[in-house]
Length: 287
Image (cartoon, rainbow, N blue to C red):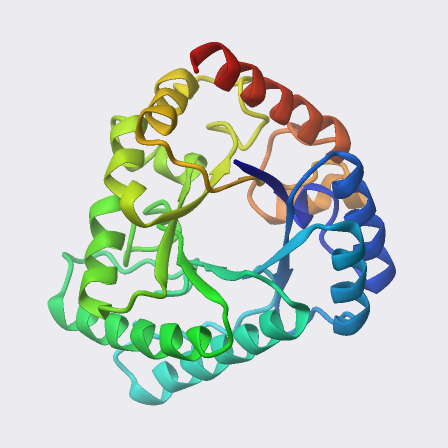
């Protein structure tokens, strides 16, 4: 099992020096990887971060998290906008390769924040799968794994459940596509978290672990024991990352801007230490 964390647990606005400091913190916390958000408004010294991560022996994972134009969406009916989406993600994949990252992950099948209230449409699935196949091929040529994260129906309508993300991967038909289960998002989409995990397990690259309110695992009501038992039973050993939003950064404005209205992540190191200790203890007791 590889434990890791998202940069947003520390802060949202960062430069190269901030990322080096966060990498130092991740290493001190004995994390194996760090997920770095990227976007049109985020700039950092790629060579410097790649070298610092290598020196600290921390893998990098990149994902959209900053400014991402809404028209850059591979599921849209407008072909020009779909191409803009392909091009935007290709830049993210290229940046991942330059950083020496192992994966590029997120709701790559659409755009978080765009929710259309209609029944699933096969033509939307087909064009989305076609775009994912192009991106998977592009990423494979650069030795970057492409990871799809199903999100809550409050954030996207394209892929919310294990079945939907598995169907997109089936339609895309490319070996360089895997998935990520986010416990926060799945809490609104499934009735059995362990069964959701088992449904995704054959192509599951990672898990975002946080509570129903984005707090540290073990502080809410999610069924961690049954989920961990399923991980042990299937022999899964992937990337298990902690994801939340720091709730005191910029006087708490960062969390509020991200729609998190609970003060559940006031300190990055404490959040990660609490989460990691809880999960390691549960793995030990249930194993």
